[in-house]
Amino acid sequence: MYQAFDQKTRGAKTVLIVEDQIEMRAINAMYLHHHGYRVLATDNGAEGIRAAREEHPDLILMDISMPGMDGIRATETLKLDPETGAIPVVIITAHRYGSVGKRAIDAGCDGYLTKPCDPRRVLEEVRRRLGELEVSH
Image (cartoon, rainbow, N blue to C red):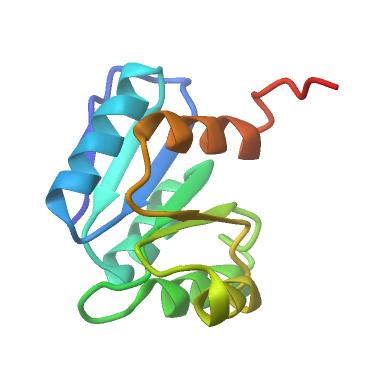
């Protein structure tokens, strides 16, 4: 089952967090919610897929190392599904980019952040991926 952080943010863009570490999930969820996003959260890849299919979030923050289905397999599954394939997926992981990053890109992820990751950096990436961040020249 997935958790929704405050249903009162109707009309707000929705971010789905798929993360098995409860502290990371809670910190990012509260920070994004505080900045006006509707946030859904789950702790594994299979539930993340289910939540994405049911809720059609605007963006997914996906951990790689989770019990059961990992984030790379979950991302591949989402990207191959016509209903969820266009949803941007940003990987947030403790793994350095290297070969893991290549696997994530091959799976279809749209961005990659390395833990520990300041919630402000997560917010910046969310805004950038959703086209809400102005690019300065």
